[in-house]
Image 1 (spheres, rainbow, N blue to C red):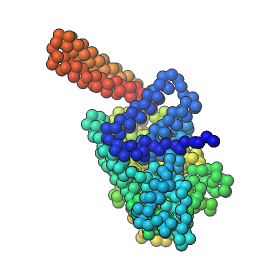
Image 2: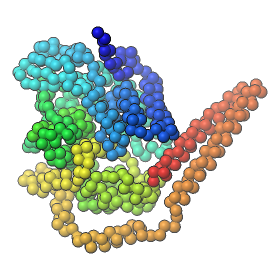
Image 3: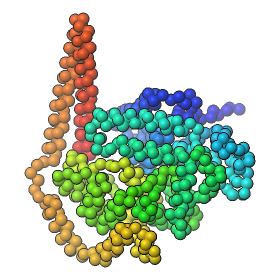
Image 4: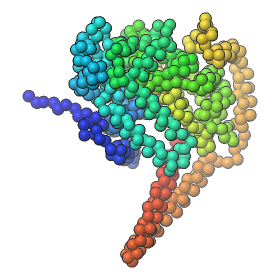
Length: 560
């Protein structure tokens, strides 16, 4: 009888990596990225763009992300919901990261439970299922039953997880510092703040006591909302590395086929999920920043279950007021208000000529607020997008990173349930709940004012003819009807020529320094030869950066 070998655990979880050195970790991360880019370049060069080839590359990427560990698995989880950005093969492969991350042995889990809770597994639980229900990047869950007869799930943290995160904290901090020092173009994105906030949330997520408190707070925020369900935390069986909570099974939220087979209206689920998040962001200021499909489920009566409360984030009152204004400005298609609030929040950096930004925002509000986003439609705005990015008016403050991540992930889930879903229709119950509330004192003042203004706007909407005239006036004011005296295409070409000439100069200096060093070393002038070789290396690095900039610009020009 042949024996099947047990699958090897990920590299970061093997015993010999308990002393993982920063340099070795850095080598693994950058080696994977370089190899993946090389594969993609080779496929493009050779014309290998079949579905089978893309699937091979996607499966390779999943294996490498699993090898690199929790932080990189989480990146893959976020990307798996973006069917509008990635090829289908990548979306399907990365979807495996949601609930098929390799687990660790039951013996390790039980040992950690007994150590943390200070008693034997049989004294703690009447029954304990050794086979995990699911494995995630930071831990795994086992079904169990308390001696009181209640069914629960026990969340157990991965052994050695905190050490690895400390190492990633060190390695990625070095990368951020390198980018800030040598890549001037990324400084405006404030990578240091984003990095600090990311790891702050990550450290909170591996503290299960903090997660339990978040779950209790989230539950309090949704008292009276019968269709939002939160598992009860059993604090007697909870520590920093062990979390015991109520067992609430459900249908995975993006499993459209099963939902429809059970007679559940997917449009209502989309509506419920979006309104729930609007309440979290605009009313509570306390939201789940990682709403991937593994963290939410649907009951057979159409209620929404939330499972994971490790990655909760808070919105500052000032930012929350601005988000409220932005939300209702989007509903009213008020371009000026959207631009003003985004500028106030720091998402748009004011520049001398804001017309390209305003035109792009107006275009997005007109085209996509009542129907799904079609990225090909942006080709109509190619010149405006190019001018906008030339001015570089956009930046991403650290706090907004997690808000946008939540919204884009939720949008990806909604599209998986209904590719034609209507954002405005999905938000209607939330707006109505504000206007008919019997307890206005509990509503944020700004939220109530904006809701009333929106109702007035809908009642006082101008006729189609008036709307057409207003748009014509706006286009004249914004300069859309002016004659351009310069060619955007010519500007692009001139910039590429300028970069190419600079690259040629750097290549000449590199070759001249290298040739000088060779001549000097043959003449036994070793000290001068070393200096020449050093200059050659410096010019080569500058040449490499110039060639990369040229390649990026050419790629951007082709897309636009």
